[in-house]
Structures are given as structure tokens and as C-alpha cells.
Image (cartoon, rainbow, N blue to C red):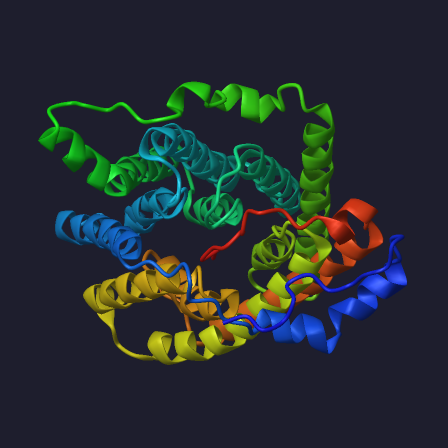
Length: 387
């Protein structure tokens, strides 16, 4: 259980120097390793793992192994909104299903027609900001906007023509539908036993999704969310640019590292998530290197992916570093389903993530405000984030 206060005493006025010192403080690193088992859940985690497994099996049986990974990404909508009432969850998951399918479409079009890596960085970084705004505006708890960036990046590397765009989008849409069914399965079963009784206490006062997205009457909240989204877009572009300049093979992984760190609700959370993700990626990369070196084949990889994804979901409410420990090899195996990866890619993953985390924390420190220092919030942004 947590023994430290989750929010350290920080200066009353924002200080970039103090913020950077906090990033290397013992408190920040201890907090990244703290464990909380009070909200652990197995049923929801198993549903996510089963949804991923179902689409990967369908892909293997039908001979569509090259696009099965996109269907698996679509099913990850089931990892969101796990604590929401079911009617509210259905609407939000529907929005996320459309969003991840759109992200794959954008990435696939870039891969098929862009021809410019700088354009890809710019568009996907903008997508990162938009995804962050979407998730925050709808108060969605789960893996965060990074999944959409991962999906778009994978699609950009896959698509070579219009046919590839169509297949990637169709597979993601199918996976999203299966993920939606998996997330709502308990509610649908309960509805069938109650012969359609669906009344939920307090549901009449719920805000519409559009009101939440537009900010409604809370313009100051919308302004803050837009600024946060802009920071994430800038950090993602800068991280990807630096990784590309360093000659790394997958610079968009650096963009995801920056985004993952900056999904916290405060600067302290940004630092804590960054440290936890770095530690988790180092351990996860070692696991990935071993798995990628083994002759797993498609079905062996599917087994490992399902097991790792389920573990990541279980760990998502316990500790972010432990979650990243499972997510990193899962993401690399999923990426390698369509085109095999060598064990050396695990090292690239760590380097790219390290660049992304440093850039993310740096941008957050440079743009720090009093609100960033003292925002605590009651909502925990936990996730298997991603990828």
C-alpha cells in the first residue's frame, strides 16, 4: 500500500528549476514504485484479454494475420471506463470506438500517400493532442490517448495503398465492436434476465457527451484542457524529431513516451508516470528481447499477447511501472504480428521511450503553472497505456 503522501509540498509559485529538481528527487522515484492493491480487478481484466484473444484467433483462422493486430487494438476500447455505470459507459465507449478507427484511418492514409516523415510526425503529434483532449474532456479513465497514437503509428507503417487503408480500418472497426460487447457483456446479460429493464438511478442528470467535449459552461476548464493538449502535441513532435535525428528506427515511440508521461493530472503525476514508464520499459524490453528471440510463431505470439495484456490490465490499478512491464513486450509482439521484429527492437524501444520521457517532463517543467503544481483531482489516471 502507499505509505507516502501522493502529492509532495511544492513551491507556492511555479518554478521551472524546482520542477526539474523534483524530476530527479527521491520522492518522485519512490512514488513511481508505490503499490496500491485496493482497486485491483480481475473480471474486467479477463474480459479485455478475452476480447484481444478472440480477434487474434479469428485473424489466424481466416488467414488475416497481417491485420489481426489492428482488430486487437480496436478491442482495447474495452479497457476504458471500467468504473462507469453501464449506460454512461456505452456512450463513451462508442465515441472511443469511432476515435480509434479514425486514428487508424489517418495513420494508414499517411503511410499510403504522405511520403514525408515530417508530415507524419506533425499529423500524428496533432492527433496526440486531440486524443488527450478527448479523453480528458469526457473524464475517461483508462489507457489514455496514447492508444490512438499507437494505432495511428502502426497503421502508417502498415499501409502502402488504398486497399491497405480499407483493410486496416475495417479490422479496427470490427475489433472495436467486439471490445464494446466485451465491456458491456455483464450489463447485456443482466438486461436479458430482467427482460429489458434498463433504468439506472441518477441517469437523468448526466451531461451529454457533446456538452462534455465542448466544455459546456466551464470555459476555464476547456481552456486548461486545450493548453494541456497543445503541450502534449508539442512534446510528441519534439520527442519524435529528436529520436529521428538520433537515427532511431521508430521515433514515433518517443512521441508515445512523451505523451504517456504527460497524461498525469498534475506535474507531480507527470514525473511519477515518466519514471514508472521508464523503469517498466527497461524491464519489459528485457522480457520482449527474450520472447522475440524465441521461435514463437503466430499462435505462440497470440498466447503471449493475451497473457501479457491481461496482466497489464490487472496491474493497471496497482502500479504503472508494473503495468508498463507487461505492456512493453505485448506491444512489441503485437507490432511484430504483421512483420517480424528482431530482439534489437527492444533496445530501440527503451531508447525512444527515454527520449520521450525526458522531453515530456522538460516541456511540462517549462510550461508549468500553479494549477499544474497543485492540481490533485479525485480521478486516478491509471492505465496500461499504452503501448
